[in-house]
Image (cartoon, rainbow, N blue to C red; front, side, top):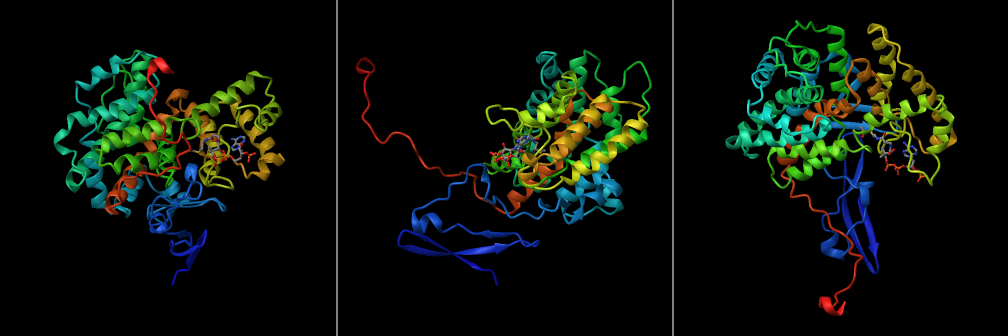
Length: 427
Ligand code: ACO
């Protein structure tokens, strides 16, 4: 039996039902609040507000726990594959062998882009940010599949999800090729998901491209680590836009835009830019740890802090351990790794960061690994989007399955009270 919450406003006391999740998280159900009291809650940034009941991802931010559908991220990243995790997130269970084969086939069948879409890449300036290209082309995909956009038809939804998972890497790689002025490489369906992407990114029409299985594996692990993170900014954008019953492609495009911002997925690009600035400034990490505390400056340590994690982000923990392995494998010595390690050490020993529980998040070390894989800095957030896609789809599907109403927050109006119109010559 759940507790009841009592709320007293003025001389009125009302009882509100509560709910408890499977891991003990508690919520107060506010449904009758406005109707019975006339009050709404005001919670900018949703700091105390749950927007959904969800069975997809569980995070315990105090103890650094992350699970997809009950499976620990540490186990998934070591033992699973990205495609398996996609299936798990979207369908709710790990696939058996025949389900997996069918799923992989469905995706492999949709890796090509409509030839006309190629012209859209040319419409962008060569220095266009690949996130802008990604958001635009994902939305444009909907124009090619107008007969299969019904969000209430399970077969249309399934087809759209497969198309999205299949085509996102092609769009991502081609946006890179466009920026380099190189010929597009068509998807090679004899390869697996990550191998195919690597060939489209780094292959040339004139040469054979051999996928390095170790590189493909670390890329697959990066995608798994990014695959979902419950009600973050882009997942919320996905659910909100989806709640208007916009089609799946339009919703993913909105989520891509939300991810782009430097306070969300765009932080991975900013981390590398920040490390580069520090390296050029005599590696003076102390100066930047101090600057991040200066309230007169806008500067924050990129890749540090998280709304939910108040301890070490388990994804960052995995990546921190992977950095040496990847650099050794690639025979690279990146001086920015030392800057990152020193910056982390200084920040973690500083009372400002300790008092606010600010630890490295997933973006802190992911960029260093992407850089070692030769992925350019402005593509980092695109890589994040490729990984996060199954999570967005799972959140969208759940929102529809739960029959949630359109997302439409209320506000407390603080503007002028009613006043008469004044004609322009009297103003
Ligand atoms: N550097 C310096 N100070 C910070 C940082 C940081 N990276 N992050 C938070 N703080 C400080 C804030 O200034 C604030 O200090 P105050 O209490 O003295 O006012 C306090 O810590 C709490 O910060 P909020 O901004 O209120 O925390 P919130 O939960 O709203 O923000 C966020 C979380 C946006 C991630 C923030 O920590 C941040 O901007 N980090 C840098 C950007 C980043 O790495 N983003 C990636 C997040 S992970 C992801 O999206 C994949």
